[in-house]
Length: 527
Image (cartoon, rainbow, N blue to C red; front, side, top):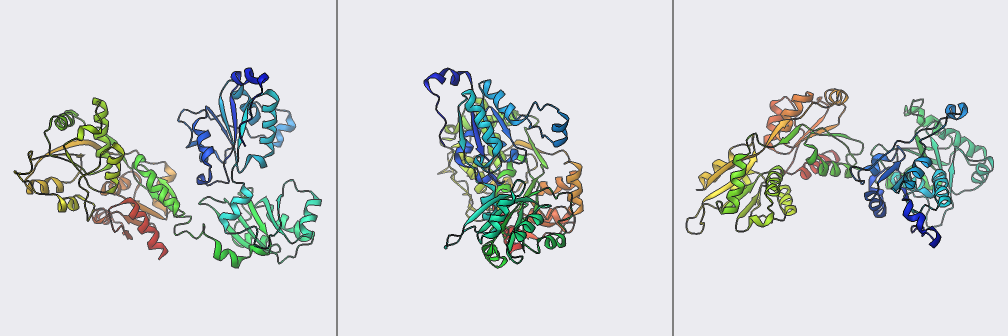
């Protein structure tokens, strides 16, 4: 739906008031947000979101966006006549009257949210322009992720029911039909809803699936029948439970049979589905690895174990960067993404850009470092053709030739704790090396107590170590992972450090790449 257009009489209102976007955040998977939703979130001054979807939408908003908290109105407050001052409608109107761009995010689709509809009417009554950005409806998205098609080639009728507000007539109509029924309920009430359908005429052996936390990596689906669902949930020890209030989507009909779901359950059959995987890295470096783990169905938990800080004495780095500009070096070798970041920041400090690399040969230790250079505007001249490591870089590095190389010096910006392998190898090839500390890696602060307990108590299914320092620092700040936890290491050196700390290495990446490491974990478990 396009933004409502103010009339000529409302032009003054448009300038006085802000704008409201009613946005569907989908059922829970952040990847289901539409392109228009992401665009609207990026321009929001105020983000008013239901608690269930706040984390889904907040990452697409600006860092300084205002996110006022919604007040949960319970029956006791209403009965006592306690005024609600911060409910969604008041927050939306207050921000819009102040000239703000407001995004009102709801679970699923705003067209199926009665409260959002009331808020749209309030905007229309005051002449506040608004637009609606549809989202994936929960009652449609969750069955898709559960592997339960709602219609077939014969064009089955589909009826959507909210068990909380369904009338007796509604149950009677659905019970008398043979179409597919999609029921919104809770764990505690889904068996009662099944009973309503049986009482209205559906056969007790009608197949049914119940999905909780749909479209997220916490999703779980049970297959049963209308007559057995209560027993199935009890046997699965789902009920009785304090979490009985959790919402579920139940699909009732002959085409939601367990046999068919076994073939179509694409989401819950992912190789790492539901696995809690510890990612002990710097916060900046963890994002791409976590995204890949999510694509395998895992639940990544990032624990910063390393903090990157500038060198204690910056003079050496400053001299080296000036030497780059004045032609002191034939080569510059980057052995990490952090080294690229450190040089880039120093360049920006001096008002330099990628053009300062003109005439200098650039080497990168691997694909990740090369990608960081390309992002900087620099295409590396040398990336190892074999092993992506210092040893692999030396395999392809040309020896110094006084005829073809006018300068015999290499600039090597690196961490304070880097090994001497590359320096010694370059010297052996005839090069002079300016070995410069570009950044320091220091141990991060310990994670929260519950995370430490999960690490030591087997609360994580796997941990991915991407360097020897992540092993040492994780053990130092949080203790050793439990022996039931799968240990995956990025390379032989990291694996050796893990073993020295008493850890059993279960998975070894075939290449020193975080993506290959995640892939090796997924393939190892899938195989």
